[in-house]
Amino acid sequence: MKSTKETSVYTDHFLTAAIEFFQEIHLPLLRIAESYQETYELTSSLGITGALRGYFVLQAEIPTARSLVSGMASRLGVTFDELDFGPFHRATIGEIVNQIAGKAIVKLETCGLNCMITPPTLFIGQGITMALPGSAITMKKNLEWDFGTLRFFVALSAE
Image (cartoon, rainbow, N blue to C red; front, side, top):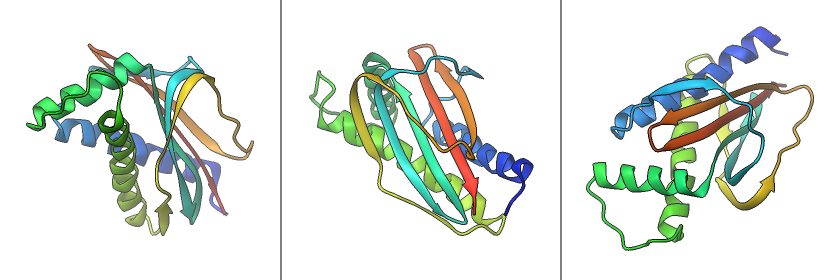
């Protein structure tokens, strides 16, 4: 069993992966702050299995998620016709969660931990909350840009 301190260090790999991902797509963060809001319109999550078990979650209000996808697409030279938060937006948010978690899993492998991720799931609705096992080490941060805030959440427990 890994110590709480070790598991806490592993949550940092997810935050580092998120920072790197947003820099790579030319959307560097303006600020990272503690997170207090608990409910959002959009929740995208995936599971972590293997040496560590847990969840990685990004949450946002729909206008922020729409702005994130639009900004990312324009910086990458991708065009799309959706005005509403449609299939392209939803797939892109799922892929963002997938890419960040994938980067974090590679970082965990350098620590000798063999982990895998599940496919991302996207929930859209009002008042979505999460209940997690009490043994999980969590990190909650707000990732902030001028167009809005994403809530970054990771919960890990060691076997």
